[in-house]
Amino acid sequence: MSLSKHPAGAGASASITSRDVTALVHAAKSGEHCAFVELFHRHSAKVLRTTYRVTKNHHDAEDALQDAFIKAYIHIDKFDGRAQFSSWLLRI
Image (cartoon, rainbow, N blue to C red; front, side, top):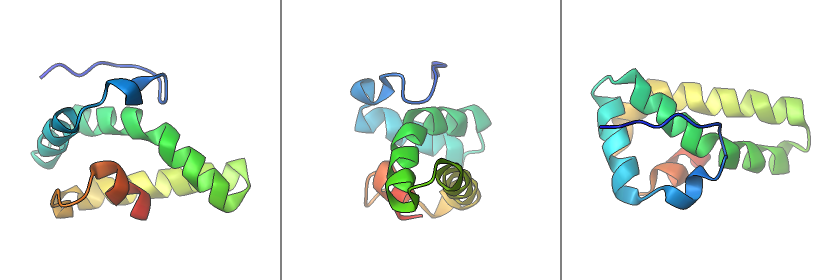
């Protein structure tokens, strides 16, 4: 599996397919750290925008972003695929 490296939010969401995300989640569940890093790159901008709308403070939004991805990393094995990964992540 090829994992591209690009800055978070740099137009990545336009090229994401659910199959790509499903493969990355499966790889992350199998312990492939670089797959989780790619999930971070693909979803962090959206999570940051959402947390900023809630907190109205950039520093607090960044803290919430970090907390969400730490929890997602710890609990990736609990993601069952019934929802999109981005929806699951935003609920965290």
